[in-house]
Image (cartoon, rainbow, N blue to C red):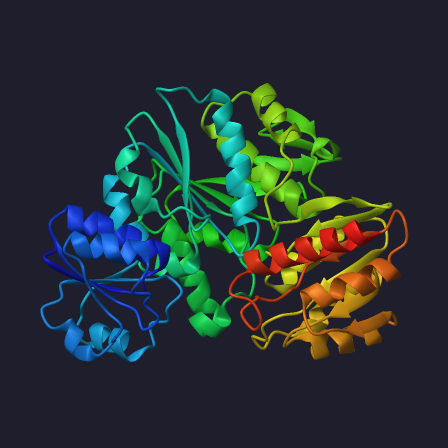
Length: 447
């Protein structure tokens, strides 16, 4: 058992890790420059013997056996660079928690579609859940794994969403079923190169054996190449019907190894990406013994996840969607692909140096007007003008709502799908989406 542990970055995952470690009898110190000393979690953990500091000086490393860092904190900060030099192991909170997972472990990662895929898998597997066989969900989706790891019984199934940040600090991860939904150019400001990003993602399968499964998107040659980096049994999924060894779409119908499951148009959530998410759930469901009929029932009832192409409502014929979780260009492209009717697109956010011009084709095809905000607003405005559509620049997402309703006609779509992270103006994508929905409802209340 580790004797002295330094937790770098508090937040919910740090609090969960501290609780788990102190229960093991470890000597725990938490370092966070933005520490809220009045936080109830800080007060409770101090009572249990956890030490706290708002400093991050290298002297904190003296005698430390292990560092647990918040996934979003880069390894380049001085204290972590010093720890790497001293060869102190640096884990993320999930690496601690996985030691307690006794039941079936299903873990999923990818650039886009992670949370929706996890919730679809949950819906499918819950068709066969009982008091003796529970289906639990944790990880990057919201609940730290450390909060529930000790509750996972041998008869249970735990589904976890894992980010590349988390996987970098999980050297011994070995889920029985691993899923990679896709890999695009994402978080390069953190990882430095695409190769580093892919290497981090592949941590989900690195310790798997031939007794385990890797559910893998094979719709791009680059992703097919990832098969060579694992010894797990490959279960492919393909929206394009390129591989029938697993789950696939053919002529608008969804199958698993030749077995018909359902028609794609029976899904309530729009977009080609949600067909991919459904194929993931179908593959995992059949691997876990869920019948085709049970899978169909679960997916036909699935209405989406908050902030992920979430239907806000129909307002005088204008259909409004909140896709605030679309924090990269590919996510917005996928969202737009789900609509046949004209779209008024609201987009903008943190500038990570991405080429916004990659959105040009999707904007030309689907968007009638573009309302932009945030750091990437000017770049997006240039793209919109190149597409020959009307462009309006506003200060923030709340200010985008009024012109959106003025531009959209009945039977058209108003879509918040920013194609960028929120951190230039908002603490997270949830806040951005919530403020958008609040502004929509406030506007309608005045009408």
